[in-house]
Amino acid sequence: MQHEPSISEFETMARDTVAGLPEPFRKAALEVALRVVDWPAHDMLQELGMHDPLELTGLYEGIPVTEKSFMDQPYGPDTVWLFRRPILAEWRDRGTVEIADLVAHVTIHEFAHHFGWSDADIASIDRWWE
Image 1 (cartoon, helix red, strand yellow):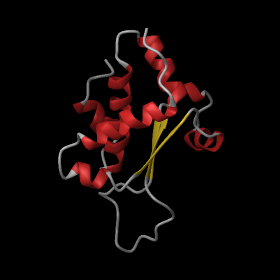
Image 2 (cartoon, helix red, strand yellow):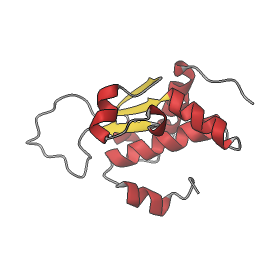
Image 3 (cartoon, rainbow, N blue to C red):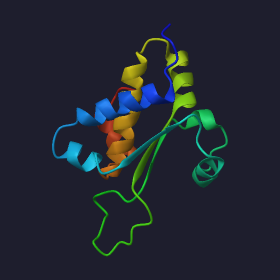
Image 4 (tube, rainbow, N blue to C red):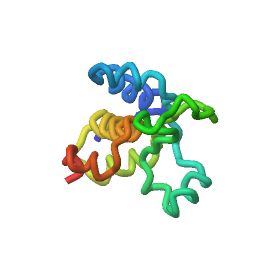
């Protein structure tokens, strides 16, 4: 098994994923804050009705580009969160996927929400989880 990458290494993998997106997605994605932390905050879990922090590998906070209006008052930057410990737990559980591939998958999934795709839209296109 590979070593467990640090937060900094996770961030590098995620930023490399964003840099590899096709235009116009790459340009729009670069305007989103990318945060990598070990665990989701308790209030994030509460807001989503979740109790187990291992169930949340990533989160998009913001207004999807398909819903933004020039009238919106920004409350902060749109943010994609990646949660290192839950991603590492899934990586260990799967045992058959490279950590960089899993980080890229979660990163793309969260940015897809930024672009206005629902979980159902993403699932219909991305069969990776099967």
